Image (cartoon, rainbow, N blue to C red; front, side, top):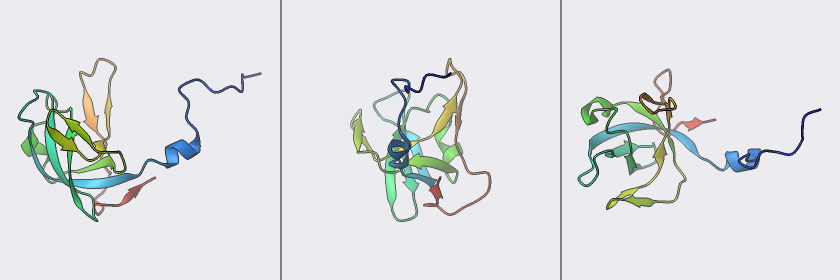
Amino acid sequence: MPDPTPAPDTITFDDFAKIDLRVARVLDAKPHPNADKLLVLQIDIGSEQRQIVAGIRGYYQPEDLVGKSIVVAKNLAPRTMRGETSNGMLLAASNEDRSQVILLTPMSDIAPGAKVS
């Protein structure tokens, strides 16, 4: 019989439900002026535009991201990363050694701000 005790890193459904995942469109992207691994993105999440900072500089060229739809966690508290404020976090998948990083994107075109569930 399986042990009903959850693993220490297990969260409840209610914890997961607190994360507000949205589709965002990248309006602008540029290298972070003070960090080799970071990009500064301006995004449209439907109801507003925001800036996020992401550690994807070694995997994506800024100009290749403009116009792309990505998935972001909208309701994270702002965080300053090397002098730039990040108001959200993009979602990406990576292999164990991070030699491959793939942004999560919708399979079809959908308006910025669409809720991901």
